[in-house]
Image 1: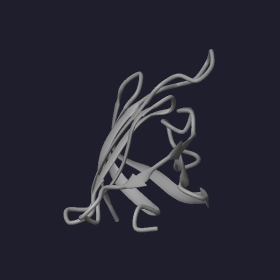
Image 2: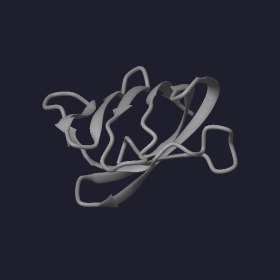
Image 3: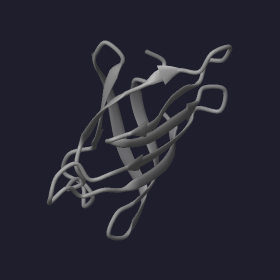
Image 4: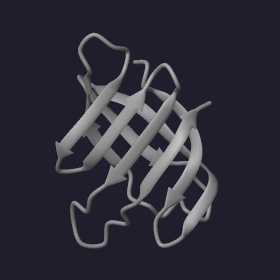
Length: 101
């Protein structure tokens, strides 16, 4: 739940986009959907649904080694790092580092 929200930062796909916006919504269970803000030059990156887990004894969240990619969220600093992996031909993968808004 603490992971859900809007993040602003740098998205690196075919080029770097500064002040990019990524939105994370809950999909059920431990899954979240990660998607770019619509209508932006970087909105062609592929949305991902990823299974996340809480890191014990902290407020942080992670998804490491999943087929969709890697996500780490540091709650105290509201920092997120996302690295997506291709799931099918034509997927537009990206790296994103940003802060919860």
